[in-house]
Length: 473
Image (cartoon, rainbow, N blue to C red; front, side, top):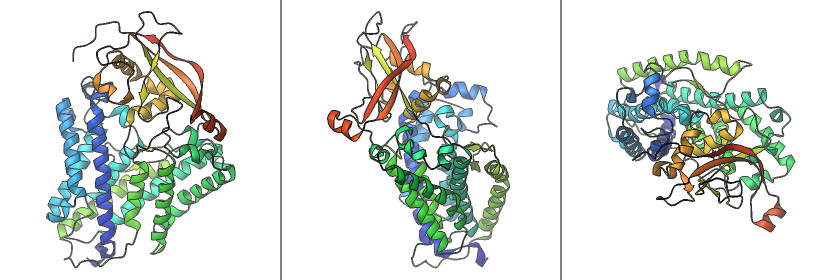
């Protein structure tokens, strides 16, 4: 069928596939380096405990058949290896069916991780990576030109990401409608980046221009993705530029990068398309059947997106094939941070020798400037931001975190930037206090060298100690 493929998007597919493989690689690397403390057998939210109470049909994962930290590590590092192979273009040297099977491997492995990841994997970009990765399975390799229907489904996904995010803002916080949200967002976002302080101090009128431009990009431009070329290319380019602006202004894991990747198939990149034979019949049948399934599954996400009670970042099927997205429907006006401290004192005193733990990405020491971590995802740091919003976000794991700090657990300490205690001398007590953080002014920055100013608010967790002997490793 001549209409089935679009040879003019050959280079766009190539760039999309390599970029997506890069995002997969980052995701699997984060899983491999962080899982033991978060999800391992001795983790804060152990996988075995989860699979014992949640049936396979609700959360399909190979870990329902067997779990061990060694198996999880093998899955994560296998995902890294396959992602690196796809990044290097190995799929282009394989037969079409084998290439599709190779692309299916990282999707299946990451699905197994996400479906047992619990709170640590409750972010919208997990489902976004899975939905994008599933579509990539059917995009083909050098043996066929890119299928039109898969290119359309990728644009449909990008449309839902952007338009859903735009709608949740207009229906949510009033500051999006009066264009003042960015007066607060750069200061209160989950994990500021090295330039966030400067973005916060941009003039107020420019912040309003940013918000207005965001509304146009998310509520108007997405419809142009389905327009003829070169309009679709212009729309996708504008989305890429908007996402790069967000990359500069904060650390949002790979959310911005996967959105940029999704925009690539809409770009008509100039190139000389190689001559290839027609797509085999079996491939056409499979692609059309999958497309029909995904369009059918789009019903609930579309209903949610158009509903006045729209919710963000929800999966409507356990395989995360078609999901709903959105971010920052509301913006905090005040930033709170939890400062976790320990002491070697046998009897904890308010004025005792309390030493603070420093996290890698979340603000702590007011003089420490934020660093760039995205697209790498610091899961514990992100959840600490949520925990500061409400103790309800921390109910399932914060106590376990404190327990492991009291044990000087090596896997947990590796998630931190610095522990104030030597490995052989754990703290006797750990406490947590809530502080209000705000960016310093230009004058305060020059005088003190600190980018943050903080004020004590209240006790978050009173001094706590172990009531049982430390577990043997």
